[in-house]
Image (cartoon, rainbow, N blue to C red; front, side):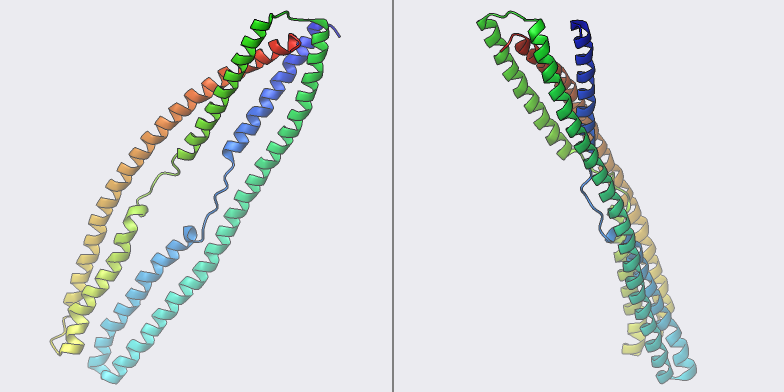
Length: 299
């Protein structure tokens, strides 16, 4: 095999080495070890269970008044008790079946994430094994090249190149460490309105039921005053609507501000990551050149 053929083969090996190293780096960066929890899928059932329970409770109170006037206090209490027990049962069933469904989707999602992680790790392992083969071939060819082509360097030049190589390797190590830190700092997914709205949503049901209970049922049943149930129901509806209106405005503003800050942070980190990658590529090429020169000099 001629020297020219050796050079061509070395170029192909180096090209495949770069491809394998890029594949290892890319797969490693895309590995996602995070797993989702049941709450990611359970929260809709939780949110539904609260208004369902409160709605049935209000229904029991309102219709209990009707039964009270038409059939008497005993019938009204029986009606309210059975309806509230049904509300508790519905609340319980929503949690049981909602929890089962949430766990199913959680396991399905986590299974997909784990399979993806294992696939990427298998790709990394395959590329690492191929790298070992390629670098072994590269060393053998470099030995052959040294036999046919010798680069003469003085001791001072050789020492200078070794020092330069050491400095280049330190720079590469620093760049890799900085890239690793940037990946750690990189923000996750963008926020959605529910991140800030859910306290208002939960509070709206609690406050609505409080306004209704203390404004109507409490005064009627315990203080013996005139029935204020309809007035209390209207007042509680107004309170409920206000919580949703102002809570929605607040949540949208907070979400927009948080996502704007998140985007700015991602853009800044992305620009810094690109700069570091360009620097890293430059120094890796420089390292390979220095290694070749030192090996060809027979050091």
